[in-house]
Length: 434
Ligand code: 5CA
Image 1 (tube, protein in one colour):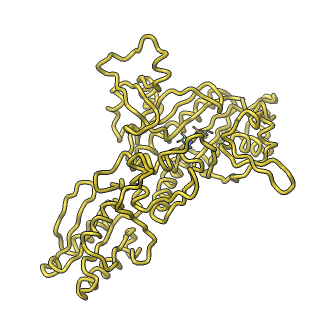
Image 2 (image 1 turned 180 degrees about the vertical axis):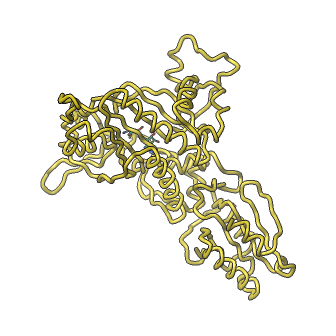
Image 3 (image 1 turned 45 degrees about the horizontal axis):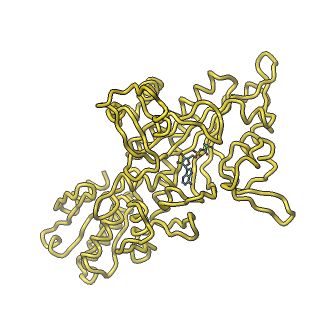
């Protein structure tokens, strides 16, 4: 992508209304713009990050055996009357009336809709188990939307729903999703702490939240320091034993922790930190299947209500959480897995024919090799170009200038460490296309 043709409105000054660093950097680096309270437009470079995260989430859902579909954002109130949640949900639900005076709503979650869809086609034990998911926008009219996309009113969620014949099946689905979550967050370069959670309005009795540790997180956590020793490789290879190990370690939200008289963790191992909730999973049994009349026939010919669970990941919130976990004084430092482009190619002198032809050739070769490249071909000072590249945080910067070219070299800078190498064009390309 040529920066001269891109839409990347970066800002040098700190936005006055943004209180936390991820919100400030997402505005400054041109990822998002607020269009109404708690509602954001995703600008091109922000959208690329959102899509990358969505793809990692999707791959891990698919790997766990979940099946993707897409449900609409608008739902009929009747659906929610069947579960009894239409009145119970309260003012967080955005209620809409259509031209025929029918009550509609913008979905805050999809338990009702998926239960109805499944009810209309699942007849017997052969239709189970199933895990269905979608990645779709939600709306919750939050009392206090804040911190940018962290607590928005409109936000992107991956929500999965499992249907099993019995409790043992539900436990297996819950574990499959648990593993998918550990792998997803590890692939995104994040350390997520699973915390046993109260279930709230979704209902049910088994629930875990997944938190990214960050000083600006909205939740206060207490946990066993041993959780920090779990390695990335272990998370990527997670199985039932990893879950047993992790859930065996103490981790609670402050409110729950305060209720526990004898904390089982010795004081020197008890950590108190803040966390950003990026995922939440629930096993709620027959709550919706019973209320909404979903039943299937067992092998023995009995009718039973399937055991269900739901599994959410805050996809748009993750963009903020990753920036919160990965930035420095100069800007964002994207982990490779979610970077909007892998390389930022900087032409130091667009008015110099030999620099420009070298830069154009490099750009062509990177593009041909399938390396996502943002090419700064604008007529700007070098200093401004460097500042923009650091701010937007692409993993690699490749700098093409007249002095280097005289020696036959370009400069390759690694954003995360600031390390710079002077290399021949060929060896720089070899590194970036490897
Ligand atoms: N139906 C269940 C699971 S599918 C559910 O809705 N769970 S939830 O309420 O916990 O939301 C799932 C995830 O969405 C949360 O863990 C959080 O990461 C994200 N999320 C929730 N509210 C917001 C919000 N206002 N802004 C951004 N992300 C949010």
